[in-house]
Image (cartoon, rainbow, N blue to C red):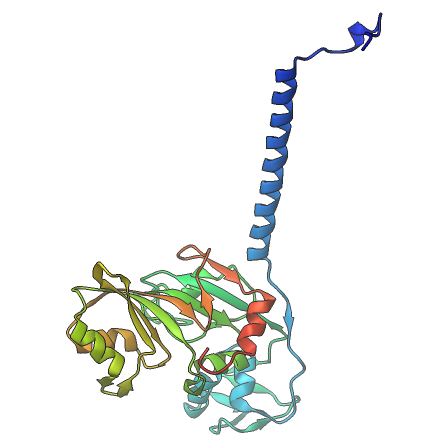
Amino acid sequence: MKKRAGFEKFFSVKKGSAKKEEIKQEKRKWKKERSDNIEAKKESLKTKQPVFKRKEVEAQMPLNKYIAHSGICSRRDAVELIKAGKVKVNNELILEPGHKIEPTDGVTVGGKKIQPVKNLVYILLNKPKDYITTTEDPQNRKTVLDLIKRATSERVYPVGRLDRNTSGVLLFTNDGDLSQKLTHPSNEIKKVYSVTLDKPLTKKDFEAILAGVPLEDGIAKVDALAFADPKDLKQVGIEIHSGKNRVVRRIFEHFGYDVKGLDRVIFAGLTKKNILRGKWRFLTEKEVRDLKYFKKGK
Protein backbone atom coordinates (compact mmCIF):
# COMPACT_ATOMS: atom_id res chain seq x y z
CA MET A 1 0.00 0.00 0.00
CA LYS A 2 1.41 3.36 -1.00
CA LYS A 3 1.97 6.01 1.61
CA ARG A 4 0.09 9.28 1.22
CA ALA A 5 3.05 11.58 0.72
CA GLY A 6 2.86 14.89 2.48
CA PHE A 7 0.00 13.91 4.84
CA GLU A 8 2.00 11.92 7.41
CA LYS A 9 1.97 14.78 9.93
CA PHE A 10 -1.84 14.61 10.15
CA PHE A 11 -1.88 10.93 11.27
CA SER A 12 -0.61 9.46 14.53
CA VAL A 13 1.10 6.21 13.76
CA LYS A 14 0.52 3.46 16.40
CA LYS A 15 2.07 0.05 16.69
CA GLY A 16 -0.16 -3.05 16.63
CA SER A 17 0.35 -3.78 20.35
CA ALA A 18 -0.70 -0.23 21.27
CA LYS A 19 -3.86 -0.53 19.21
CA LYS A 20 -4.76 -3.86 20.87
CA GLU A 21 -4.27 -2.36 24.33
CA GLU A 22 -6.48 0.61 23.40
CA ILE A 23 -9.24 -1.75 22.25
CA LYS A 24 -8.95 -3.76 25.50
CA GLN A 25 -9.28 -0.59 27.58
CA GLU A 26 -12.38 0.45 25.63
CA LYS A 27 -13.95 -2.97 26.20
CA ARG A 28 -13.22 -2.85 29.93
CA LYS A 29 -14.74 0.61 30.15
CA TRP A 30 -17.85 -0.48 28.26
CA LYS A 31 -18.30 -3.62 30.41
CA LYS A 32 -17.94 -1.62 33.63
CA GLU A 33 -20.53 0.94 32.50
CA ARG A 34 -22.93 -1.84 31.55
CA SER A 35 -22.38 -3.60 34.89
CA ASP A 36 -22.93 -0.35 36.81
CA ASN A 37 -26.16 0.30 34.90
CA ILE A 38 -27.47 -3.20 35.63
CA GLU A 39 -26.69 -2.88 39.34
CA ALA A 40 -28.32 0.55 39.50
CA LYS A 41 -31.45 -0.85 37.86
CA LYS A 42 -31.57 -3.77 40.32
CA GLU A 43 -31.21 -1.38 43.25
CA SER A 44 -34.01 0.85 41.97
CA LEU A 45 -36.31 -2.17 41.65
CA LYS A 46 -35.64 -3.08 45.28
CA THR A 47 -36.62 0.33 46.59
CA LYS A 48 -39.30 1.32 44.10
CA GLN A 49 -42.72 0.58 45.51
CA PRO A 50 -45.02 -1.25 43.05
CA VAL A 51 -48.53 0.24 42.98
CA PHE A 52 -51.39 -2.14 43.74
CA LYS A 53 -54.82 -0.51 43.74
CA ARG A 54 -57.72 -1.78 45.83
CA LYS A 55 -61.24 -1.80 44.48
CA GLU A 56 -63.90 0.42 46.03
CA VAL A 57 -65.30 -0.71 49.37
CA GLU A 58 -68.01 -3.26 48.80
CA ALA A 59 -71.43 -2.80 50.35
CA GLN A 60 -72.31 -4.95 53.36
CA MET A 61 -68.66 -5.61 54.27
CA PRO A 62 -68.13 -7.40 57.63
CA LEU A 63 -66.71 -5.08 60.29
CA ASN A 64 -63.57 -7.15 60.93
CA LYS A 65 -62.82 -7.20 57.18
CA TYR A 66 -63.36 -3.42 57.00
CA ILE A 67 -60.82 -2.91 59.80
CA ALA A 68 -58.32 -5.21 58.07
CA HIS A 69 -58.76 -3.28 54.82
CA SER A 70 -57.94 -0.13 56.74
CA GLY A 71 -54.46 -1.42 57.50
CA ILE A 72 -54.98 -1.62 61.25
CA CYS A 73 -54.39 -5.35 61.68
CA SER A 74 -55.37 -8.73 60.28
CA ARG A 75 -58.98 -9.90 60.30
CA ARG A 76 -58.31 -12.29 63.17
CA ASP A 77 -56.80 -9.53 65.29
CA ALA A 78 -59.68 -7.23 64.31
CA VAL A 79 -62.09 -9.71 65.90
CA GLU A 80 -60.27 -9.26 69.21
CA LEU A 81 -60.41 -5.45 68.91
CA ILE A 82 -64.15 -5.57 68.32
CA LYS A 83 -64.85 -7.97 71.19
CA ALA A 84 -62.71 -5.80 73.47
CA GLY A 85 -65.11 -2.89 72.87
CA LYS A 86 -62.67 -0.67 70.98
CA VAL A 87 -64.73 -0.26 67.80
CA LYS A 88 -67.68 2.02 67.09
CA VAL A 89 -69.82 2.37 63.98
CA ASN A 90 -71.59 5.72 63.60
CA ASN A 91 -70.72 6.41 67.27
CA GLU A 92 -72.40 3.18 68.37
CA LEU A 93 -70.36 0.49 70.16
CA ILE A 94 -70.35 -2.73 68.12
CA LEU A 95 -69.25 -6.07 69.58
CA GLU A 96 -70.14 -8.31 66.64
CA PRO A 97 -67.24 -8.89 64.14
CA GLY A 98 -69.69 -9.82 61.37
CA HIS A 99 -71.65 -6.55 61.64
CA LYS A 100 -72.24 -5.31 58.09
CA ILE A 101 -70.68 -1.99 57.07
CA GLU A 102 -71.98 0.28 54.31
CA PRO A 103 -69.61 2.60 52.36
CA THR A 104 -71.27 5.62 54.04
CA ASP A 105 -70.74 4.34 57.62
CA GLY A 106 -68.22 5.98 59.94
CA VAL A 107 -65.95 3.54 61.80
CA THR A 108 -63.59 4.38 64.66
CA VAL A 109 -61.03 2.19 66.44
CA GLY A 110 -59.85 3.47 69.79
CA GLY A 111 -61.49 6.81 69.04
CA LYS A 112 -59.70 7.27 65.70
CA LYS A 113 -61.62 7.25 62.44
CA ILE A 114 -60.46 4.68 59.91
CA GLN A 115 -61.00 4.13 56.19
CA PRO A 116 -59.98 1.27 53.89
CA VAL A 117 -56.66 2.00 52.19
CA LYS A 118 -56.51 2.47 48.42
CA ASN A 119 -52.87 1.50 47.81
CA LEU A 120 -51.77 -1.99 48.85
CA VAL A 121 -48.19 -2.52 50.03
CA TYR A 122 -46.19 -5.75 50.36
CA ILE A 123 -42.77 -5.67 52.06
CA LEU A 124 -40.41 -8.56 52.80
CA LEU A 125 -37.98 -8.17 55.73
CA ASN A 126 -35.04 -10.31 56.78
CA LYS A 127 -35.65 -9.90 60.51
CA PRO A 128 -32.66 -9.82 62.87
CA LYS A 129 -32.75 -10.99 66.48
CA ASP A 130 -33.69 -8.65 69.36
CA TYR A 131 -36.64 -7.06 67.52
CA ILE A 132 -40.18 -7.85 68.62
CA THR A 133 -42.93 -8.50 66.08
CA THR A 134 -45.55 -5.97 67.05
CA THR A 135 -46.80 -2.61 65.81
CA GLU A 136 -46.07 -0.87 69.12
CA ASP A 137 -44.53 -1.73 72.47
CA PRO A 138 -45.37 -0.13 75.86
CA GLN A 139 -41.82 -0.91 77.05
CA ASN A 140 -40.28 1.00 74.14
CA ARG A 141 -38.31 -2.01 72.91
CA LYS A 142 -37.14 -2.23 69.31
CA THR A 143 -39.92 -3.41 66.98
CA VAL A 144 -39.79 -4.73 63.42
CA LEU A 145 -41.61 -1.59 62.24
CA ASP A 146 -38.51 0.42 63.18
CA LEU A 147 -36.67 -1.42 60.39
CA ILE A 148 -39.15 -0.57 57.62
CA LYS A 149 -40.35 2.88 58.71
CA ARG A 150 -38.83 4.51 55.61
CA ALA A 151 -40.32 1.97 53.21
CA THR A 152 -43.82 3.43 52.86
CA SER A 153 -46.20 6.07 54.18
CA GLU A 154 -49.01 3.48 54.28
CA ARG A 155 -49.76 1.80 57.59
CA VAL A 156 -48.65 -1.84 57.35
CA TYR A 157 -48.49 -4.66 59.87
CA PRO A 158 -46.61 -7.99 60.10
CA VAL A 159 -48.28 -11.15 58.82
CA GLY A 160 -47.89 -13.69 61.60
CA ARG A 161 -45.28 -13.57 64.32
CA LEU A 162 -41.59 -14.24 64.90
CA ASP A 163 -40.49 -14.12 68.52
CA ARG A 164 -37.77 -11.75 69.67
CA ASN A 165 -34.91 -14.23 69.32
CA THR A 166 -36.03 -15.66 65.96
CA SER A 167 -34.68 -14.20 62.74
CA GLY A 168 -35.61 -14.57 59.08
CA VAL A 169 -38.42 -14.02 56.60
CA LEU A 170 -41.22 -11.69 57.73
CA LEU A 171 -43.93 -10.22 55.49
CA PHE A 172 -45.66 -6.86 56.01
CA THR A 173 -48.78 -5.63 54.25
CA ASN A 174 -51.98 -3.62 54.57
CA ASP A 175 -53.86 -6.22 52.53
CA GLY A 176 -56.27 -7.73 55.04
CA ASP A 177 -57.55 -10.41 52.66
CA LEU A 178 -54.07 -11.74 51.93
CA SER A 179 -53.09 -11.60 55.60
CA GLN A 180 -56.17 -13.66 56.44
CA LYS A 181 -55.25 -16.29 53.85
CA LEU A 182 -51.65 -16.58 54.99
CA THR A 183 -52.45 -16.90 58.68
CA HIS A 184 -55.59 -19.06 58.64
CA PRO A 185 -54.75 -22.61 59.83
CA SER A 186 -56.96 -24.24 57.17
CA ASN A 187 -54.61 -23.06 54.40
CA GLU A 188 -51.61 -24.88 55.92
CA ILE A 189 -49.00 -22.34 54.84
CA LYS A 190 -45.56 -23.95 54.81
CA LYS A 191 -42.64 -22.50 56.75
CA VAL A 192 -39.06 -23.76 56.80
CA TYR A 193 -36.71 -23.05 59.71
CA SER A 194 -33.00 -23.54 60.26
CA VAL A 195 -32.46 -24.69 63.86
CA THR A 196 -29.25 -24.73 65.91
CA LEU A 197 -29.43 -27.00 68.97
CA ASP A 198 -27.26 -27.16 72.08
CA LYS A 199 -26.49 -30.84 71.47
CA PRO A 200 -26.75 -33.37 68.61
CA LEU A 201 -30.26 -34.58 67.75
CA THR A 202 -30.51 -38.33 68.35
CA LYS A 203 -32.06 -40.76 65.88
CA LYS A 204 -34.73 -41.69 68.43
CA ASP A 205 -35.82 -38.07 68.91
CA PHE A 206 -35.58 -37.42 65.17
CA GLU A 207 -38.12 -40.17 64.48
CA ALA A 208 -40.32 -39.12 67.41
CA ILE A 209 -40.55 -35.56 66.06
CA LEU A 210 -41.62 -36.84 62.64
CA ALA A 211 -44.31 -38.98 64.30
CA GLY A 212 -45.90 -35.90 65.92
CA VAL A 213 -45.14 -34.14 69.19
CA PRO A 214 -47.75 -33.90 71.98
CA LEU A 215 -47.76 -30.33 73.30
CA GLU A 216 -50.07 -28.71 75.84
CA ASP A 217 -52.21 -27.22 73.03
CA GLY A 218 -52.36 -30.35 70.87
CA ILE A 219 -50.22 -32.50 68.58
CA ALA A 220 -47.58 -30.60 66.60
CA LYS A 221 -47.14 -32.22 63.20
CA VAL A 222 -43.92 -31.80 61.22
CA ASP A 223 -43.93 -31.99 57.42
CA ALA A 224 -40.21 -32.65 56.98
CA LEU A 225 -37.05 -32.88 59.06
CA ALA A 226 -33.43 -33.09 57.89
CA PHE A 227 -29.85 -32.37 58.90
CA ALA A 228 -28.24 -29.42 57.16
CA ASP A 229 -24.87 -31.18 57.46
CA PRO A 230 -24.64 -34.96 58.11
CA LYS A 231 -21.48 -34.31 60.11
CA ASP A 232 -23.13 -31.72 62.39
CA LEU A 233 -26.24 -33.12 64.07
CA LYS A 234 -26.84 -29.85 65.92
CA GLN A 235 -27.91 -28.14 62.68
CA VAL A 236 -31.44 -29.14 61.71
CA GLY A 237 -33.88 -28.03 59.02
CA ILE A 238 -37.57 -28.34 59.81
CA GLU A 239 -40.61 -27.76 57.60
CA ILE A 240 -43.92 -27.12 59.33
CA HIS A 241 -47.33 -25.58 58.65
CA SER A 242 -48.58 -25.27 62.23
CA GLY A 243 -49.43 -21.77 63.43
CA LYS A 244 -49.02 -22.59 67.13
CA ASN A 245 -47.12 -20.05 69.20
CA ARG A 246 -43.36 -20.79 69.47
CA VAL A 247 -44.08 -24.26 68.05
CA VAL A 248 -40.57 -25.02 66.72
CA ARG A 249 -38.87 -24.13 69.99
CA ARG A 250 -41.43 -26.10 72.00
CA ILE A 251 -41.00 -29.20 69.81
CA PHE A 252 -37.29 -29.45 70.60
CA GLU A 253 -37.69 -28.34 74.22
CA HIS A 254 -40.16 -31.22 74.66
CA PHE A 255 -37.23 -33.62 74.10
CA GLY A 256 -34.81 -31.70 76.31
CA TYR A 257 -33.00 -29.61 73.70
CA ASP A 258 -32.20 -25.92 74.01
CA VAL A 259 -32.66 -23.98 70.77
CA LYS A 260 -29.60 -21.74 70.43
CA GLY A 261 -30.54 -20.31 67.05
CA LEU A 262 -33.75 -20.18 65.01
CA ASP A 263 -34.01 -18.68 61.54
CA ARG A 264 -37.06 -18.79 59.23
CA VAL A 265 -35.71 -19.27 55.72
CA ILE A 266 -39.01 -19.77 53.83
CA PHE A 267 -42.54 -18.47 54.40
CA ALA A 268 -45.32 -19.18 51.88
CA GLY A 269 -42.70 -19.64 49.16
CA LEU A 270 -40.90 -16.37 49.97
CA THR A 271 -37.19 -16.52 50.85
CA LYS A 272 -34.66 -14.03 52.19
CA LYS A 273 -32.39 -14.51 49.17
CA ASN A 274 -30.38 -11.34 48.39
CA ILE A 275 -31.79 -9.54 51.47
CA LEU A 276 -29.18 -8.75 54.12
CA ARG A 277 -30.13 -9.17 57.78
CA GLY A 278 -32.15 -6.15 58.89
CA LYS A 279 -32.89 -5.08 55.29
CA TRP A 280 -36.11 -5.25 53.26
CA ARG A 281 -37.52 -5.10 49.75
CA PHE A 282 -40.92 -4.80 48.07
CA LEU A 283 -42.52 -7.91 46.63
CA THR A 284 -42.71 -8.12 42.85
CA GLU A 285 -46.04 -8.27 41.05
CA LYS A 286 -45.47 -11.96 40.33
CA GLU A 287 -44.80 -12.71 44.00
CA VAL A 288 -47.99 -10.92 45.05
CA ARG A 289 -49.97 -12.77 42.39
CA ASP A 290 -48.52 -16.12 43.50
CA LEU A 291 -49.46 -15.40 47.12
CA LYS A 292 -53.02 -14.42 46.28
CA TYR A 293 -53.61 -17.52 44.18
CA PHE A 294 -51.64 -20.03 46.21
CA LYS A 295 -52.90 -23.57 46.69
CA LYS A 296 -53.48 -25.18 50.06
CA GLY A 297 -50.28 -26.44 51.66
CA LYS A 298 -47.95 -24.40 49.42
